[in-house]
Length: 338
Image (cartoon, rainbow, N blue to C red):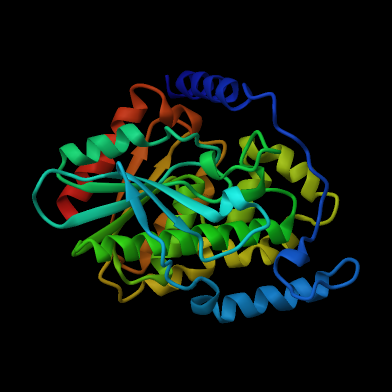
């Protein structure tokens, strides 16, 4: 029976993952001009390698930006200028939707939806969190929904075959999340958590590793390496095709180390942090072997955590009944631990 179920799930997942017709294979680009100033002339593997080493060794500085001075809340719509500048004005304004819970404990969570989520993504989850007594601030990551440049149909600039731009976008999203944590503190919230799904989970993990203000983390789909998800995942094969023009799998892992949870997971030791790790048994985007590496690390290092296993895949997580299973597991954990 399990074999039949797995085959059925795989067919359903493939149908969902391939229904979009606007995926583009973009040419490989080092993108050093996004990270190194002044930009190097020509291809720059050596300069990029030095930059990567420096970013990792000084990651506290790399993932820190100035505090925004223009937080504005208008009808539960929070905006502020991103501390990280990009060439796209739309992307430089951060948007968050604020879902305050009824009066109760001063606890709130920053919510980060999945890659290519539209402006309505995770709004229902935020309302469900309210019913559990948890306030939620849903943030749009770099190049998503309102932050998407007019030239794009998808949030390609957050994850693409441009190596430097992808690092820059991830850094921007992490620093934007930390600005959201600052805003929540300014509103008087005493306990703060984070909840991220898929790409949002990766950004949430890196934020948590660098910001002790996060006391509870919910990581919805987990993997050790950003690069491995892109290289092996069903939904990112168009990105891999572009990358293969310039890098192999091992090289990509090295150059994208600054945006991989594996690089910073050791920072969670000796932290007062409760984590919920969610993975999907039949996932073909975040392959189970990479999720199990995360689970093994938490278990071997006796980190405070719980594990929730979804009996589905990646895209099917958003379909009934798995979306309710996932949402209720996250809300119950946050209600209990935050």
